[in-house]
Length: 66
Image 1 (tube, rainbow, N blue to C red):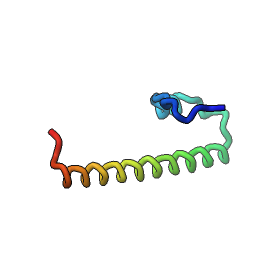
Image 2 (cartoon, one colour; image 1 turned 90 degrees about the vertical axis):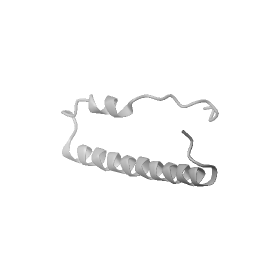
Image 3 (cartoon, rainbow, N blue to C red; image 1 turned 135 degrees about the vertical axis):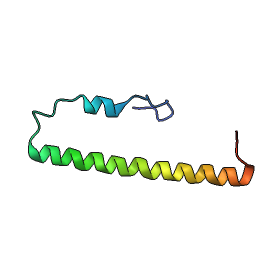
């Protein structure tokens, strides 16, 4: 059983993906991979925008931290 309280390991997953040999993949597998990557980009962008809005709201309430 996995412990959800453990810190998630951080790494540069994009660099690992960029280094992978794409030669063995079929056209359909590549299309599926692109779709997954586009979905992940959208998820990360959504999170980034929410974090920026949260930061902006905190700065508006408490003032900008310098």
